[in-house]
Length: 278
Image (cartoon, one colour):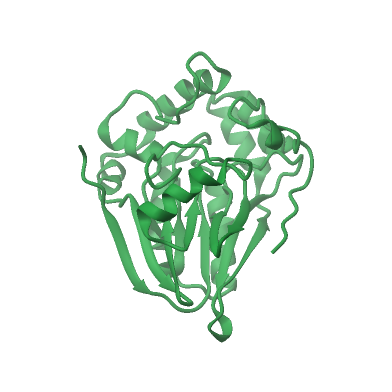
């Protein structure tokens, strides 16, 4: 059994930027870096839930920009597969599904584009990041604490989420992987998915999502935010480099090509703007 690793940051103060699923979308990453600079949030307080590499056209450039920025990240299932030399993305798509078929295209492309230095950098990514914030223990996971590729949605049974709180001994879980932003509180526990910046959230909008934490007056605050970026360039590069046109189109329409991974409740939200009670 592979030993899991944790980067414990101790106690953090001041605003924190949370995001995930960069998916090789350099234009989205550059827009997010600008947000951090405008808000004067240092790279040490910019935390990623993994999958820096993915569907879009610039995997090597995206990894290099992320490293130059100096933000912190846990490992996503894509990085886990890439650093081990695996032949698939490990996304837990159903065999034979459209997602499974498309993943064979973009994953092979990413694998061919990445430099040995980028793969070596992925070797050092931890499985989890932990820190104390406004009196709460926060843990970053990719899918869930116990399974990196588990799809956890707002509609997923709370018992699934509860196991991650118990296993990590945390009051706040910040997760990624499912591609949709949401915040859910129960029994003073918060499950926060910041969404992803590399692909839109099936709303029919081209904007993507990230989250902010704030500890003003010693209180714990969170908020989900939209991010606009140069999606037309990202789309054009995907088309020029022969990546799945269905995913390239999603950058323009804001709608997913298919909803194979989604529970029924999330499918009903297709084409609707996400609303959050904060």
